[in-house]
Every structure is written in structure tokens, then in C-alpha cells.
Length: 118
Image (cartoon, rainbow, N blue to C red; front, side, top):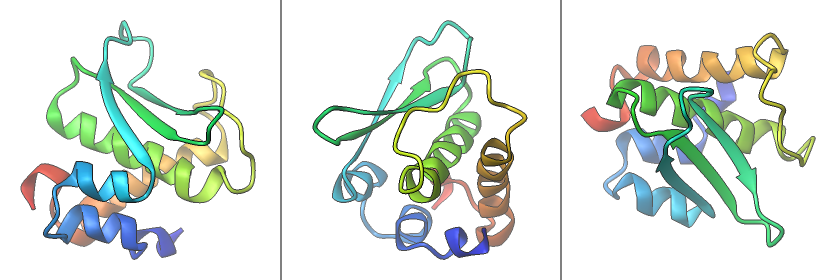
């Protein structure tokens, strides 16, 4: 998992000179804010054309939105190559979900900043 901390996408988001949306677009990832009715903080969707969308609940605080984005990025970087389908909404106890939560926390610990603090 520590390889994710140094992944060029994660590093570019946290330390790059480009705005986050441009970095994500470069990697074929589109982020949208939406009303998810408090059911989930966010989810990852892959279109039939292979475009990856991360949808994040718009009522969350900026720091929770950032953590949610990093959580979903872990799925893009590590899980989609192995299992190219959308994860179920009730998967919180799975190893993949714990690792995704770890990425957000570790980014804050290693880089000492969130996406909005670069």
C-alpha cells in the first residue's frame, strides 16, 4: 500500500502545480459533486466507454470530501485493474475498503496537507 503514497497521481494532487481537476482529467478521471442523500460519502463509476467518474456527496465538509476522493482514488489505482466492476455499497468491512480509508489518512500523515491546503 505504501506505493500508493508515491504514485504520480497522488503526488501530483498533493504537491503539483496543476489544479486538481486538471491532474485528474490527465488520468481520465472526472470528479463530480452530487446529492447522495447521505447514504454514502462517494462512489466510483466506470462508463461503458471506460471513463472513470468519482462522485462525492456535496454536503460533506471539504476535508471529508478530500478523504472520500482519496479513498475512491485507491480503488481506481489498485482495485479496478484487478476487478473492473463497481463495488457494492455495503462493503465497508472488506479489505479493499479498509485500504482505501488508509490511503486518505496516510496522505495526511506523510504529506502533512490535504488537497485544499497545497
